[in-house]
Length: 539
Ligand code: ISL
Image (cartoon, rainbow, N blue to C red; front, side, top):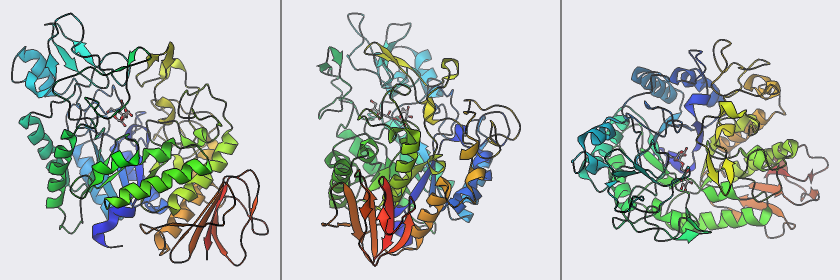
Protein backbone atom coordinates (compact mmCIF):
# COMPACT_ATOMS: atom_id res chain seq x y z
CA UNK A 1 0.00 0.00 0.00
CA UNK A 2 1.31 3.50 -0.76
CA UNK A 3 3.20 5.15 2.07
CA UNK A 4 0.80 8.10 2.23
CA UNK A 5 -2.11 5.75 2.94
CA UNK A 6 -0.57 3.54 5.63
CA UNK A 7 -3.11 4.64 8.24
CA UNK A 8 -6.21 3.95 6.13
CA UNK A 9 -6.13 0.22 6.81
CA UNK A 10 -3.64 -0.04 9.67
CA UNK A 11 -4.07 -2.59 12.45
CA UNK A 12 -3.27 -0.64 15.60
CA UNK A 13 -2.42 -2.30 18.91
CA UNK A 14 -3.32 -0.35 22.05
CA UNK A 15 -0.75 -0.45 24.83
CA UNK A 16 -1.90 0.63 28.28
CA UNK A 17 1.60 1.29 29.63
CA UNK A 18 0.90 0.68 33.30
CA UNK A 19 -0.26 -2.85 32.57
CA UNK A 20 1.72 -4.01 29.55
CA UNK A 21 5.20 -5.06 30.65
CA UNK A 22 7.35 -4.09 33.62
CA UNK A 23 11.06 -4.02 32.78
CA UNK A 24 12.33 -2.70 36.12
CA UNK A 25 10.24 -5.07 38.22
CA UNK A 26 8.55 -2.44 40.42
CA UNK A 27 5.06 -3.77 39.71
CA UNK A 28 4.14 -1.04 37.20
CA UNK A 29 4.58 -1.35 33.45
CA UNK A 30 7.09 0.96 31.79
CA UNK A 31 8.54 2.22 28.52
CA UNK A 32 11.42 -0.23 28.59
CA UNK A 33 8.89 -3.02 29.10
CA UNK A 34 7.21 -1.95 25.85
CA UNK A 35 10.61 -1.84 24.12
CA UNK A 36 11.35 -5.39 25.23
CA UNK A 37 8.06 -6.58 23.73
CA UNK A 38 8.36 -4.81 20.37
CA UNK A 39 9.53 -8.04 18.68
CA UNK A 40 6.38 -9.75 20.01
CA UNK A 41 4.23 -7.03 18.46
CA UNK A 42 6.10 -7.16 15.16
CA UNK A 43 5.64 -10.92 15.07
CA UNK A 44 1.97 -10.57 15.92
CA UNK A 45 1.77 -8.60 12.69
CA UNK A 46 0.28 -5.24 13.66
CA UNK A 47 1.17 -2.03 11.81
CA UNK A 48 1.20 0.45 14.65
CA UNK A 49 1.06 0.83 18.41
CA UNK A 50 -1.03 3.41 20.24
CA UNK A 51 0.31 4.08 23.71
CA UNK A 52 -2.17 5.40 26.29
CA UNK A 53 -0.84 8.43 28.25
CA UNK A 54 2.71 8.01 29.48
CA UNK A 55 3.21 11.54 30.79
CA UNK A 56 4.01 12.66 34.34
CA UNK A 57 0.75 12.28 36.23
CA UNK A 58 -0.58 11.53 39.70
CA UNK A 59 -2.45 8.69 37.93
CA UNK A 60 -5.79 9.60 39.47
CA UNK A 61 -7.36 8.75 36.10
CA UNK A 62 -4.73 6.27 34.96
CA UNK A 63 -2.61 8.99 33.31
CA UNK A 64 -5.47 10.81 31.53
CA UNK A 65 -4.66 13.44 34.15
CA UNK A 66 -1.54 14.97 32.62
CA UNK A 67 0.83 17.11 34.70
CA UNK A 68 3.41 17.67 31.95
CA UNK A 69 2.71 17.08 28.26
CA UNK A 70 6.37 17.10 27.27
CA UNK A 71 7.87 14.42 29.48
CA UNK A 72 7.52 10.78 30.55
CA UNK A 73 6.16 9.72 33.94
CA UNK A 74 9.27 8.78 35.98
CA UNK A 75 7.39 5.61 37.03
CA UNK A 76 7.38 4.63 33.34
CA UNK A 77 10.86 5.84 32.33
CA UNK A 78 12.50 8.81 30.67
CA UNK A 79 12.33 10.79 27.46
CA UNK A 80 15.47 8.98 26.35
CA UNK A 81 13.61 5.67 26.78
CA UNK A 82 10.75 7.06 24.69
CA UNK A 83 13.14 8.18 21.96
CA UNK A 84 14.71 4.74 21.92
CA UNK A 85 11.27 3.12 21.73
CA UNK A 86 10.30 5.24 18.72
CA UNK A 87 13.54 4.42 16.91
CA UNK A 88 13.36 0.70 17.66
CA UNK A 89 9.70 0.46 16.70
CA UNK A 90 10.38 2.17 13.38
CA UNK A 91 13.24 -0.22 12.70
CA UNK A 92 10.76 -3.09 13.10
CA UNK A 93 8.24 -1.43 10.79
CA UNK A 94 5.92 -0.41 13.63
CA UNK A 95 4.47 3.10 13.80
CA UNK A 96 3.93 4.88 17.10
CA UNK A 97 0.80 6.79 18.05
CA UNK A 98 0.56 8.48 21.43
CA UNK A 99 -2.35 9.90 23.38
CA UNK A 100 -3.18 13.61 23.45
CA UNK A 101 -5.44 14.70 26.30
CA UNK A 102 -6.53 18.22 25.34
CA UNK A 103 -9.81 18.65 27.22
CA UNK A 104 -8.28 18.77 30.68
CA UNK A 105 -5.00 18.43 32.54
CA UNK A 106 -4.16 17.29 36.07
CA UNK A 107 -4.49 19.53 39.07
CA UNK A 108 -0.71 18.93 39.35
CA UNK A 109 -0.11 20.79 36.06
CA UNK A 110 1.98 23.91 36.87
CA UNK A 111 -0.46 26.21 35.05
CA UNK A 112 -3.36 25.00 37.18
CA UNK A 113 -1.34 25.37 40.35
CA UNK A 114 -0.42 28.90 39.25
CA UNK A 115 -4.10 29.63 38.59
CA UNK A 116 -5.06 28.56 42.10
CA UNK A 117 -2.29 30.66 43.60
CA UNK A 118 -2.90 33.75 41.47
CA UNK A 119 -6.45 34.27 42.68
CA UNK A 120 -9.73 35.60 41.34
CA UNK A 121 -9.71 37.58 38.13
CA UNK A 122 -6.07 36.75 37.35
CA UNK A 123 -4.91 35.99 33.79
CA UNK A 124 -3.73 32.58 35.10
CA UNK A 125 -7.33 31.63 35.91
CA UNK A 126 -8.44 32.51 32.37
CA UNK A 127 -6.69 29.40 31.07
CA UNK A 128 -9.34 27.28 32.82
CA UNK A 129 -13.06 27.68 33.55
CA UNK A 130 -13.20 29.50 36.88
CA UNK A 131 -16.58 31.00 37.76
CA UNK A 132 -18.37 32.58 40.72
CA UNK A 133 -21.85 31.60 41.71
CA UNK A 134 -24.47 33.61 43.49
CA UNK A 135 -26.47 31.08 45.42
CA UNK A 136 -23.75 28.76 46.76
CA UNK A 137 -24.62 26.27 44.04
CA UNK A 138 -22.34 25.27 41.15
CA UNK A 139 -22.46 27.70 38.18
CA UNK A 140 -24.33 25.12 36.05
CA UNK A 141 -25.97 21.76 36.68
CA UNK A 142 -23.50 19.89 34.44
CA UNK A 143 -22.66 16.38 35.65
CA UNK A 144 -19.10 15.03 35.78
CA UNK A 145 -18.34 11.76 33.97
CA UNK A 146 -17.30 10.11 37.24
CA UNK A 147 -20.37 11.23 39.20
CA UNK A 148 -21.32 14.41 41.05
CA UNK A 149 -21.27 17.93 39.68
CA UNK A 150 -18.72 19.03 37.06
CA UNK A 151 -17.70 22.01 39.22
CA UNK A 152 -15.48 22.06 42.28
CA UNK A 153 -15.45 24.98 44.71
CA UNK A 154 -12.17 26.27 46.11
CA UNK A 155 -11.36 28.26 49.24
CA UNK A 156 -11.94 31.72 47.77
CA UNK A 157 -15.45 30.71 46.70
CA UNK A 158 -14.79 30.30 42.97
CA UNK A 159 -15.59 27.07 41.14
CA UNK A 160 -13.60 25.36 38.40
CA UNK A 161 -15.01 23.12 35.70
CA UNK A 162 -14.00 19.44 35.45
CA UNK A 163 -16.00 17.26 33.07
CA UNK A 164 -14.19 14.22 34.49
CA UNK A 165 -12.54 13.76 37.90
CA UNK A 166 -12.08 16.73 40.26
CA UNK A 167 -8.36 16.30 39.65
CA UNK A 168 -8.88 17.05 35.92
CA UNK A 169 -9.60 20.78 35.38
CA UNK A 170 -10.90 21.62 31.88
CA UNK A 171 -8.75 23.85 29.71
CA UNK A 172 -10.32 27.04 28.32
CA UNK A 173 -9.99 26.48 24.59
CA UNK A 174 -11.13 30.04 23.86
CA UNK A 175 -7.77 31.25 25.17
CA UNK A 176 -4.95 31.77 22.63
CA UNK A 177 -2.32 30.61 25.11
CA UNK A 178 -4.00 27.21 25.42
CA UNK A 179 -4.32 26.89 21.65
CA UNK A 180 -0.65 27.78 21.11
CA UNK A 181 0.50 25.48 23.89
CA UNK A 182 -1.12 22.47 22.23
CA UNK A 183 0.32 23.44 18.84
CA UNK A 184 3.73 23.31 20.49
CA UNK A 185 3.00 19.98 22.19
CA UNK A 186 2.06 18.41 18.85
CA UNK A 187 5.26 19.69 17.26
CA UNK A 188 7.34 18.53 20.22
CA UNK A 189 6.27 14.92 19.67
CA UNK A 190 6.13 15.01 15.87
CA UNK A 191 9.72 16.28 15.95
CA UNK A 192 10.64 13.30 18.15
CA UNK A 193 9.26 11.02 15.47
CA UNK A 194 5.80 9.94 16.61
CA UNK A 195 3.51 9.02 13.75
CA UNK A 196 0.34 10.40 15.24
CA UNK A 197 -2.03 10.96 18.11
CA UNK A 198 -5.16 9.46 19.51
CA UNK A 199 -7.22 12.46 20.60
CA UNK A 200 -8.91 11.95 23.97
CA UNK A 201 -12.55 13.12 24.15
CA UNK A 202 -12.09 14.88 20.83
CA UNK A 203 -15.67 16.18 20.99
CA UNK A 204 -15.51 18.09 24.26
CA UNK A 205 -12.90 20.87 24.21
CA UNK A 206 -15.23 23.67 23.11
CA UNK A 207 -17.96 24.83 25.51
CA UNK A 208 -21.01 26.99 24.94
CA UNK A 209 -19.79 30.24 26.60
CA UNK A 210 -23.32 31.05 27.81
CA UNK A 211 -23.02 28.02 30.10
CA UNK A 212 -26.67 26.93 29.90
CA UNK A 213 -27.93 24.14 32.16
CA UNK A 214 -28.55 20.71 30.66
CA UNK A 215 -32.05 19.20 30.79
CA UNK A 216 -33.02 16.75 33.52
CA UNK A 217 -33.49 13.07 32.82
CA UNK A 218 -35.26 11.12 35.61
CA UNK A 219 -34.66 14.12 37.84
CA UNK A 220 -30.89 14.15 37.20
CA UNK A 221 -28.95 16.41 34.81
CA UNK A 222 -28.54 14.38 31.65
CA UNK A 223 -25.20 13.01 30.46
CA UNK A 224 -26.62 12.42 26.99
CA UNK A 225 -24.74 13.93 24.07
CA UNK A 226 -27.92 15.44 22.64
CA UNK A 227 -27.58 17.86 19.74
CA UNK A 228 -26.87 21.26 21.29
CA UNK A 229 -25.25 19.89 24.46
CA UNK A 230 -23.20 22.82 25.86
CA UNK A 231 -20.03 20.78 26.38
CA UNK A 232 -20.10 18.07 23.69
CA UNK A 233 -19.93 18.30 19.95
CA UNK A 234 -19.91 22.11 19.91
CA UNK A 235 -18.94 23.65 16.54
CA UNK A 236 -15.72 25.03 18.07
CA UNK A 237 -14.11 21.59 18.25
CA UNK A 238 -13.86 21.54 14.48
CA UNK A 239 -11.87 24.78 14.41
CA UNK A 240 -9.35 23.17 16.75
CA UNK A 241 -9.14 19.97 14.70
CA UNK A 242 -8.61 21.91 11.47
CA UNK A 243 -5.72 23.74 13.07
CA UNK A 244 -4.13 20.47 14.20
CA UNK A 245 -4.62 18.91 10.78
CA UNK A 246 -2.64 21.75 9.24
CA UNK A 247 0.19 21.07 11.69
CA UNK A 248 0.22 17.34 10.90
CA UNK A 249 0.19 18.15 7.20
CA UNK A 250 3.41 20.16 7.60
CA UNK A 251 5.08 16.78 8.21
CA UNK A 252 3.30 14.91 5.42
CA UNK A 253 6.15 14.90 2.94
CA UNK A 254 8.85 13.63 5.26
CA UNK A 255 10.30 10.17 4.47
CA UNK A 256 8.38 8.82 7.44
CA UNK A 257 5.07 9.54 5.69
CA UNK A 258 2.00 11.36 7.01
CA UNK A 259 1.37 12.00 10.69
CA UNK A 260 -2.19 11.20 11.64
CA UNK A 261 -4.94 11.61 14.21
CA UNK A 262 -7.60 9.24 15.45
CA UNK A 263 -10.53 10.78 17.32
CA UNK A 264 -11.94 9.30 20.47
CA UNK A 265 -15.51 10.61 20.37
CA UNK A 266 -18.37 8.48 21.64
CA UNK A 267 -20.80 10.00 19.15
CA UNK A 268 -23.68 8.27 17.47
CA UNK A 269 -25.00 7.93 14.85
CA UNK A 270 -22.17 7.75 12.33
CA UNK A 271 -23.50 10.87 10.59
CA UNK A 272 -22.26 12.86 13.59
CA UNK A 273 -18.94 11.06 13.76
CA UNK A 274 -18.36 11.71 10.06
CA UNK A 275 -18.13 15.45 10.82
CA UNK A 276 -14.86 14.72 12.67
CA UNK A 277 -13.14 13.03 9.75
CA UNK A 278 -13.81 15.42 6.91
CA UNK A 279 -10.77 15.93 4.66
CA UNK A 280 -9.37 18.94 6.54
CA UNK A 281 -10.04 17.55 10.04
CA UNK A 282 -8.91 14.43 11.89
CA UNK A 283 -7.88 11.47 9.75
CA UNK A 284 -10.00 8.81 11.39
CA UNK A 285 -12.17 8.10 14.41
CA UNK A 286 -12.89 5.09 16.58
CA UNK A 287 -16.15 3.47 15.59
CA UNK A 288 -17.71 2.73 18.95
CA UNK A 289 -20.99 1.60 17.38
CA UNK A 290 -19.21 -1.64 16.54
CA UNK A 291 -17.99 -1.98 20.14
CA UNK A 292 -21.48 -1.33 21.47
CA UNK A 293 -23.21 -3.76 19.12
CA UNK A 294 -24.47 -7.03 20.55
CA UNK A 295 -23.41 -10.38 19.06
CA UNK A 296 -26.33 -10.24 16.66
CA UNK A 297 -26.32 -10.51 12.86
CA UNK A 298 -28.88 -7.80 12.18
CA UNK A 299 -27.29 -5.31 14.54
CA UNK A 300 -23.76 -5.94 13.29
CA UNK A 301 -24.78 -5.64 9.67
CA UNK A 302 -26.57 -2.36 10.34
CA UNK A 303 -23.50 -0.98 12.09
CA UNK A 304 -21.21 -2.08 9.26
CA UNK A 305 -23.44 -0.52 6.59
CA UNK A 306 -24.13 2.66 8.50
CA UNK A 307 -20.46 3.18 9.34
CA UNK A 308 -19.15 2.60 5.86
CA UNK A 309 -21.92 4.68 4.21
CA UNK A 310 -21.22 7.69 6.38
CA UNK A 311 -17.44 7.59 6.72
CA UNK A 312 -16.81 6.78 3.08
CA UNK A 313 -19.11 9.67 2.11
CA UNK A 314 -16.51 12.09 3.52
CA UNK A 315 -13.54 10.12 2.21
CA UNK A 316 -12.50 8.64 5.58
CA UNK A 317 -11.77 4.97 6.20
CA UNK A 318 -13.99 2.94 8.50
CA UNK A 319 -12.49 1.66 11.76
CA UNK A 320 -13.38 -1.31 13.93
CA UNK A 321 -12.93 -1.49 17.69
CA UNK A 322 -13.98 -4.36 19.97
CA UNK A 323 -12.43 -3.37 23.31
CA UNK A 324 -10.33 -0.72 25.00
CA UNK A 325 -9.18 0.32 28.46
CA UNK A 326 -12.60 1.83 29.28
CA UNK A 327 -14.92 -1.07 28.54
CA UNK A 328 -15.70 -4.61 29.65
CA UNK A 329 -13.46 -6.91 27.60
CA UNK A 330 -15.36 -8.38 24.64
CA UNK A 331 -14.69 -12.01 25.52
CA UNK A 332 -16.78 -11.33 28.61
CA UNK A 333 -19.38 -9.19 26.81
CA UNK A 334 -19.92 -11.81 24.14
CA UNK A 335 -20.39 -14.42 26.85
CA UNK A 336 -23.49 -12.57 27.99
CA UNK A 337 -26.90 -12.64 26.41
CA UNK A 338 -28.10 -9.39 27.71
CA UNK A 339 -28.02 -6.08 25.91
CA UNK A 340 -26.49 -4.50 29.00
CA UNK A 341 -23.31 -6.49 28.44
CA UNK A 342 -21.29 -3.28 28.59
CA UNK A 343 -22.53 -2.55 32.10
CA UNK A 344 -22.31 -4.00 35.54
CA UNK A 345 -19.11 -5.97 35.97
CA UNK A 346 -19.73 -8.94 38.20
CA UNK A 347 -23.52 -8.84 38.10
CA UNK A 348 -24.36 -10.28 34.66
CA UNK A 349 -24.05 -14.08 34.26
CA UNK A 350 -21.26 -14.88 31.80
CA UNK A 351 -20.27 -17.98 29.80
CA UNK A 352 -16.56 -17.43 29.16
CA UNK A 353 -16.19 -20.41 26.82
CA UNK A 354 -18.96 -19.06 24.62
CA UNK A 355 -17.37 -15.63 24.89
CA UNK A 356 -14.01 -16.98 23.72
CA UNK A 357 -15.58 -18.76 20.77
CA UNK A 358 -17.37 -15.58 19.72
CA UNK A 359 -14.22 -13.52 20.32
CA UNK A 360 -12.44 -15.80 17.80
CA UNK A 361 -15.26 -15.34 15.31
CA UNK A 362 -15.30 -11.59 15.95
CA UNK A 363 -11.54 -11.29 15.37
CA UNK A 364 -11.89 -12.77 11.89
CA UNK A 365 -14.88 -10.54 11.15
CA UNK A 366 -13.00 -7.46 12.33
CA UNK A 367 -9.88 -8.24 10.31
CA UNK A 368 -11.93 -8.93 7.15
CA UNK A 369 -13.74 -5.59 7.20
CA UNK A 370 -12.49 -2.66 5.14
CA UNK A 371 -10.52 0.05 6.94
CA UNK A 372 -8.52 0.25 10.15
CA UNK A 373 -8.74 -2.17 13.08
CA UNK A 374 -7.81 -1.80 16.74
CA UNK A 375 -6.62 -4.50 19.12
CA UNK A 376 -6.57 -3.76 22.84
CA UNK A 377 -3.62 -5.39 24.62
CA UNK A 378 -4.60 -8.89 25.74
CA UNK A 379 -7.41 -9.26 23.18
CA UNK A 380 -5.02 -11.37 21.15
CA UNK A 381 -4.63 -13.66 24.19
CA UNK A 382 -8.40 -13.93 24.72
CA UNK A 383 -8.24 -12.31 28.16
CA UNK A 384 -11.57 -11.97 29.94
CA UNK A 385 -12.62 -9.06 32.14
CA UNK A 386 -11.44 -9.62 35.71
CA UNK A 387 -14.67 -9.19 37.61
CA UNK A 388 -13.72 -10.30 41.11
CA UNK A 389 -10.97 -7.85 41.98
CA UNK A 390 -11.17 -7.20 45.72
CA UNK A 391 -12.52 -3.77 46.68
CA UNK A 392 -9.30 -2.71 48.36
CA UNK A 393 -7.19 -3.01 45.19
CA UNK A 394 -9.55 -1.06 42.93
CA UNK A 395 -7.78 2.01 41.60
CA UNK A 396 -10.15 3.63 39.10
CA UNK A 397 -12.71 6.20 40.29
CA UNK A 398 -15.98 4.66 41.51
CA UNK A 399 -19.20 6.59 42.00
CA UNK A 400 -22.86 6.32 42.91
CA UNK A 401 -25.52 6.01 40.24
CA UNK A 402 -29.21 5.27 40.83
CA UNK A 403 -28.44 3.98 44.30
CA UNK A 404 -25.60 1.60 43.46
CA UNK A 405 -21.84 1.96 43.28
CA UNK A 406 -20.45 1.97 39.75
CA UNK A 407 -17.17 0.09 39.79
CA UNK A 408 -14.36 1.54 37.76
CA UNK A 409 -12.58 0.10 34.75
CA UNK A 410 -9.88 -1.87 36.57
CA UNK A 411 -11.17 -5.23 35.32
CA UNK A 412 -9.88 -4.66 31.79
CA UNK A 413 -6.58 -3.16 32.99
CA UNK A 414 -5.13 -6.16 34.78
CA UNK A 415 -1.46 -6.63 33.76
CA UNK A 416 -0.69 -8.88 30.80
CA UNK A 417 0.34 -12.50 31.50
CA UNK A 418 3.47 -13.18 29.44
CA UNK A 419 4.91 -16.44 30.72
CA UNK A 420 5.15 -18.90 33.60
CA UNK A 421 2.43 -20.56 35.58
CA UNK A 422 1.62 -18.10 38.35
CA UNK A 423 1.40 -14.34 38.96
CA UNK A 424 3.15 -12.13 37.96
CA UNK A 425 3.34 -14.36 34.84
CA UNK A 426 6.49 -12.66 33.60
CA UNK A 427 4.84 -9.21 33.70
CA UNK A 428 7.70 -7.97 35.86
CA UNK A 429 11.29 -9.03 35.97
CA UNK A 430 11.19 -10.47 39.48
CA UNK A 431 8.49 -11.82 41.74
CA UNK A 432 7.02 -8.47 42.80
CA UNK A 433 3.27 -8.55 42.28
CA UNK A 434 1.80 -6.09 39.79
CA UNK A 435 -0.18 -2.98 40.74
CA UNK A 436 -3.41 -4.87 40.08
CA UNK A 437 -3.51 -8.58 40.99
CA UNK A 438 -3.75 -11.16 38.20
CA UNK A 439 -6.07 -14.19 38.48
CA UNK A 440 -4.47 -17.45 39.59
CA UNK A 441 -5.97 -19.35 36.61
CA UNK A 442 -4.29 -17.46 33.76
CA UNK A 443 -1.39 -19.90 33.18
CA UNK A 444 -3.00 -21.17 29.97
CA UNK A 445 -3.55 -17.64 28.68
CA UNK A 446 0.06 -16.45 28.71
CA UNK A 447 1.72 -15.43 25.47
CA UNK A 448 4.31 -18.14 26.10
CA UNK A 449 1.70 -20.89 26.55
CA UNK A 450 -0.13 -19.84 23.39
CA UNK A 451 2.91 -19.41 21.14
CA UNK A 452 3.44 -22.53 19.11
CA UNK A 453 -0.03 -23.92 19.85
CA UNK A 454 -1.69 -23.71 16.43
CA UNK A 455 -5.17 -23.73 17.96
CA UNK A 456 -4.58 -20.90 20.41
CA UNK A 457 -6.26 -17.51 20.29
CA UNK A 458 -2.87 -15.88 19.71
CA UNK A 459 -2.13 -18.18 16.77
CA UNK A 460 -5.49 -17.29 15.22
CA UNK A 461 -4.67 -13.57 15.46
CA UNK A 462 -1.22 -14.11 13.94
CA UNK A 463 -2.61 -16.17 11.08
CA UNK A 464 -5.35 -13.62 10.41
CA UNK A 465 -2.94 -10.68 10.43
CA UNK A 466 -0.55 -12.50 8.09
CA UNK A 467 -3.31 -13.19 5.56
CA UNK A 468 -4.57 -9.63 5.96
CA UNK A 469 -1.15 -8.26 5.04
CA UNK A 470 -0.73 -10.55 2.06
CA UNK A 471 -4.17 -10.92 0.52
CA UNK A 472 -4.84 -8.29 -2.16
CA UNK A 473 -8.55 -8.06 -1.24
CA UNK A 474 -7.95 -7.04 2.37
CA UNK A 475 -7.15 -3.56 3.55
CA UNK A 476 -9.24 -0.59 2.48
CA UNK A 477 -11.46 -1.57 -0.49
CA UNK A 478 -15.17 -2.24 -0.44
CA UNK A 479 -17.38 -5.12 0.64
CA UNK A 480 -20.38 -6.65 -1.13
CA UNK A 481 -22.97 -8.60 0.86
CA UNK A 482 -23.85 -12.02 -0.49
CA UNK A 483 -27.58 -11.85 -1.02
CA UNK A 484 -28.21 -15.61 -0.80
CA UNK A 485 -26.81 -16.07 2.73
CA UNK A 486 -29.12 -17.80 5.24
CA UNK A 487 -30.81 -15.74 7.96
CA UNK A 488 -28.46 -14.55 10.72
CA UNK A 489 -25.39 -15.37 8.65
CA UNK A 490 -23.15 -12.47 7.66
CA UNK A 491 -21.54 -13.27 4.34
CA UNK A 492 -19.64 -10.80 2.20
CA UNK A 493 -17.15 -10.79 -0.62
CA UNK A 494 -14.18 -8.57 -1.20
CA UNK A 495 -12.46 -8.35 -4.53
CA UNK A 496 -10.41 -10.08 -5.68
CA UNK A 497 -11.45 -13.50 -4.57
CA UNK A 498 -12.13 -13.22 -0.82
CA UNK A 499 -15.22 -14.17 1.17
CA UNK A 500 -15.94 -13.94 4.90
CA UNK A 501 -18.84 -15.89 6.42
CA UNK A 502 -19.89 -15.44 10.06
CA UNK A 503 -22.47 -17.82 11.46
CA UNK A 504 -24.52 -15.96 14.08
CA UNK A 505 -27.53 -18.26 13.65
CA UNK A 506 -28.30 -21.15 15.97
CA UNK A 507 -27.67 -23.88 13.39
CA UNK A 508 -24.57 -25.03 11.47
CA UNK A 509 -24.34 -23.72 7.89
CA UNK A 510 -23.28 -25.73 4.85
CA UNK A 511 -20.91 -23.63 2.75
CA UNK A 512 -21.17 -23.56 -1.05
CA UNK A 513 -18.71 -26.00 -2.66
CA UNK A 514 -15.45 -25.18 -4.49
CA UNK A 515 -14.14 -22.62 -2.08
CA UNK A 516 -10.76 -22.95 -0.47
CA UNK A 517 -10.63 -22.34 3.28
CA UNK A 518 -8.00 -19.72 4.13
CA UNK A 519 -8.68 -19.60 7.86
CA UNK A 520 -11.48 -20.58 10.23
CA UNK A 521 -12.15 -19.67 13.84
CA UNK A 522 -13.33 -23.25 14.57
CA UNK A 523 -12.60 -26.54 12.80
CA UNK A 524 -14.84 -27.23 9.78
CA UNK A 525 -16.03 -30.72 8.91
CA UNK A 526 -17.36 -31.52 5.44
CA UNK A 527 -17.70 -27.86 4.55
CA UNK A 528 -20.00 -27.09 7.47
CA UNK A 529 -19.50 -23.85 9.42
CA UNK A 530 -20.45 -24.33 13.09
CA UNK A 531 -22.52 -21.90 15.14
CA UNK A 532 -20.61 -18.81 16.35
CA UNK A 533 -17.75 -19.37 13.92
CA UNK A 534 -16.21 -17.38 11.07
CA UNK A 535 -14.47 -18.67 7.96
CA UNK A 536 -12.34 -16.90 5.37
CA UNK A 537 -12.60 -18.38 1.89
CA UNK A 538 -10.74 -17.94 -1.38
CA UNK A 539 -13.42 -17.75 -4.06
O1 ISL B 1 -19.20 10.41 27.21
C1 ISL B 1 -18.37 10.18 28.02
C2 ISL B 1 -18.24 11.01 29.24
O2 ISL B 1 -19.37 11.81 29.43
C3 ISL B 1 -17.44 9.08 27.88
O3 ISL B 1 -17.86 8.16 26.97
C4 ISL B 1 -16.07 9.64 27.52
O4 ISL B 1 -16.06 10.07 26.20
C5 ISL B 1 -15.03 8.63 27.72
O5 ISL B 1 -15.12 8.14 29.02
C6 ISL B 1 -13.70 9.31 27.51
O6 ISL B 1 -12.66 8.44 27.88
C7 ISL B 1 -11.38 8.97 27.78
O7 ISL B 1 -11.20 10.12 28.56
C8 ISL B 1 -11.34 9.95 29.97
C9 ISL B 1 -10.51 8.79 30.50
O8 ISL B 1 -10.91 8.49 31.80
C10 ISL B 1 -10.67 7.55 29.65
O9 ISL B 1 -9.82 6.52 30.08
C11 ISL B 1 -10.37 7.94 28.23
O10 ISL B 1 -10.38 6.86 27.34
C12 ISL B 1 -10.91 11.24 30.60
O11 ISL B 1 -9.67 11.63 30.10
